[in-house]
Every structure is written in structure tokens, then in C-alpha cells.
Image 1 (cartoon, rainbow, N blue to C red):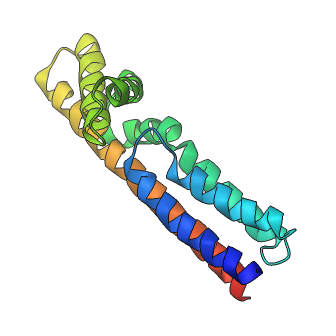
Image 2 (tube, rainbow, N blue to C red; image 1 turned 90 degrees about the vertical axis):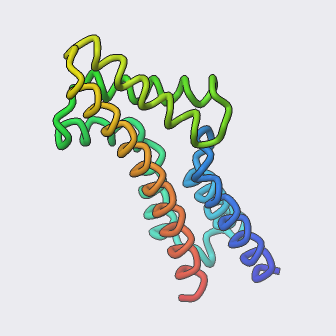
Length: 162
């Protein structure tokens, strides 16, 4: 029974990984929930607590990437914190106002960054830098979600086989 449950859990985790492309849902959180759910149901017999803790740490990094990634990117990319804030607010607004998966969030993030940067800098160079920054941050965020899901699945499978 435990083996069948493990196969179902792995299948569900693979499905939740595909949700990394849906901005409203956190694929890493859902993948983690499946892994931890399995661990709890099996009383951490096949997934030890250190593996669960590692999966939890990875999930927390991925779930919060929309908060820390723009700030790190702003320093590296030379854009203002206002553009970072615009990326976050615009991305959220775009997700709900333009209900086209991926496109709405990306358009909103770029528009938000460019709008707030226009209020601050009033130069075309700064506007284009903010837009490029928002697009790069968005793509990197999706990459972090995907990579985290794959790592959680890998840790889960390694726990089952060891």
C-alpha cells in the first residue's frame, strides 16, 4: 500500500510542477504539500525528518522569491527600489486584470516597473532598464519555482530509495 501511495504522490508532484507556469499558484508549495502529506501519512517512516526539513527550506525560498528576487536584482541591475516595487505590484495587478496565463503577470510587472520608474527618473533609458529588469525577474522567478519543484521531487525519491 505504501508503494502505491508513493507512486501517486510522485505523480501528483509532477503535476503540481507544471503549475509553475501559473502565476497565482505556487507550484513549489503544492509539491511540498504532497511530499509532506505523504511523510505525515506514513509517519515519516520513508521520508525522514531531515529530508522533510530540507524540502521545507527549499519551498520557503521559492515561495518568497517574488519578495527577495526584485531587491537582489535591483542592486545587480542598477534599477531603483521603486522599480522593484512596481514589478511586484504590477505583476500582481496584471495577474488579475489580464487573465491570460503568464502574459498578464509579465505585462503587469513590466508596466508597473516602467510606470514607477517614470515617476522617479523621467528618462527613456531608465524606463527600458526597468522593463528589462521586470521581465528578467519574472523569468528567473519561474525558473526558481521549477528548479525547487524538481529538487523537492528528487529529495522525495531519494528518501524513498535509501
